[in-house]
Structures are given as C-alpha cells and as structure tokens.
Length: 224
Image 1 (cartoon, rainbow, N blue to C red):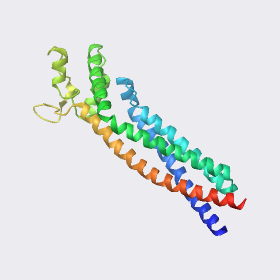
Image 2 (cartoon, one colour):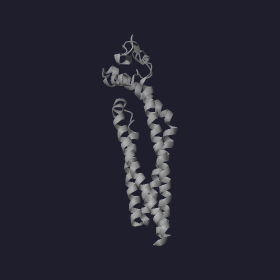
Image 3 (cartoon, rainbow, N blue to C red):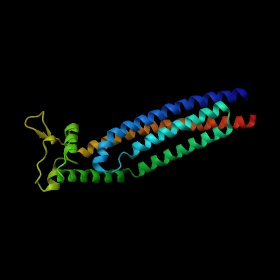
Image 4 (cartoon, rainbow, N blue to C red):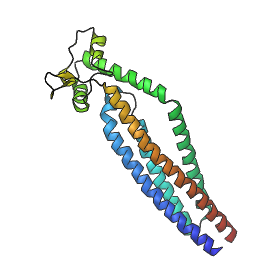
C-alpha cells in the first residue's frame, strides 16, 4: 500500500507540474492573442477578444488547481485531493461544453463577424477615419471586406478605391484580389487549430490527473 501511495503521490506531482506549465502557457497564448486582436476588437466592436480573455482566466484557474493538487499530495489530505479532483473535473466539463458550443455555432459566429466587419468599413469611410483599414490593407495585402468592389457597392462608385488596395511593386499597379475578411478567417482558423490542439492535450492530462488524484485520495482514506 505504501509503495502504491508513494507512486501515486509522485505521479500526481508530475501531472501538477505539467498543469502549472500548461496554465502559464495558456496565459501567455491568451495574452499574445489579446494584444493581436485588441485593435481589431476596438474597430469592429464585436467582443472578438472574449476567447482570449477566457484563455487567460482558464490559465490562472489551472495554475491555482495545480497548487491544490500539490498541497494535497504533500499533506496526504483527503479533502484537498477530493477538491482537486472535483475542480479538475469541473474545468474539463466546462472546456468540453465551450468547445462543443463553439463548433456548433461557428457558422453563425462567422456570419455575425462578417456583418460587423462590413459595418466597420462603412462607418470608417463615412466618418473619414480610415487609418485602421488602410494599415490593415497595406500590411495584409487585402482590399475591402470581400474584394475591391465593396467600395463601389457600398458607396455607389462615389468613393475611390484607396491606394493601400494597390500592389505598389507591380507596374501597372494591380488591386489586391483578396478581401480582408479572408485574412480574418484565416487568422481565427489558425488560432483555433492551435487552441484545439492544446485543449486536447490538456484534456488528456486532466483525465489522468483526476484518476491518480482519486486513487491517492482513496489510499489516504484507507490509511487514516
């Protein structure tokens, strides 16, 4: 029994170290994503940074949970080990629910985001405040929401296509074919793949952590 308890204890230490590192990594990813999407969120006012904020919160929560697990293993505390298992299971359920909800509503979210993007371009031109759009088009080599014809459709050909829509390296100058919404979709999809991969890894470690914590808690209860 002592050997089994010791093995479970050190395995739990290992998993909690992985939890802690994972939590720090999640906070870092959320912070970088928040920095990248902050200007975009201010422009379209759609709450696109909410997932980034959620990542930071989850990362902090994971690091706190890892502390509970370490304390429970060190002190052989049945109560703390059970609390650790419950919190870990709760986070796992919330992550699973959030992932399913995001997948089911992905098309609706993209449609709403596309509408917000279109409204942003219209308001920027009408208010003569196109600095953000000009910087985006120049940096990402895109034009309008879908393509350059957006300017003609929105303003009945009364608004000239901006210079930032042209490829200055070509002679004669050519308008960028790709719309800026494609850039946004690619950016989101790339980050979703990254977050999804991390989420699967975390889920696997969480399940193992729950199992070992329950085994250690059961052994501690029998010894007390």
